Image (cartoon, rainbow, N blue to C red; front, side, top):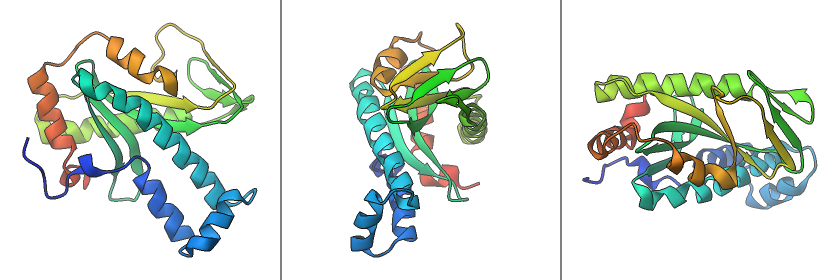
Length: 205
């Protein structure tokens, strides 16, 4: 593949979060202080950044198995897709969630963190649908996208249900689970979808 002028393959994991942190606190010394100050917004964003970097490290193990991985794909709105994995088993929109030392429970429709409900499932499903629409528009064929939540540093993760609509996985299991799924795409299809997905122009909508 020829390199693109605005190639998202160059993105580092968490680039969108890094930009947000700098926007919140332009002063580099104060940024470091805020990273450790309890209750600060920058501390919260920094913890999320750690989760994205660790998730990316696990996903990148798929690269030598016929997969392509993109990180920090930014929408025109400023929101971003944490990670996009494109390989023989299909296309996966992956949202990293770091819940250090907490208990995560996933039922049929929702995730709770230490018993408190979250919107993780609904948000992940909405993002996957949006990614699918964009790729369909640019690839010219239907591109199903499966949502995934990567759970980082949880004390316990419990998943109920045999075939959940969203894959909720510990980050350590990402490469093993995704590479073990049944193939749905040929190598040519993978290349075509990746060629579109890696262009920043694709995501301007």
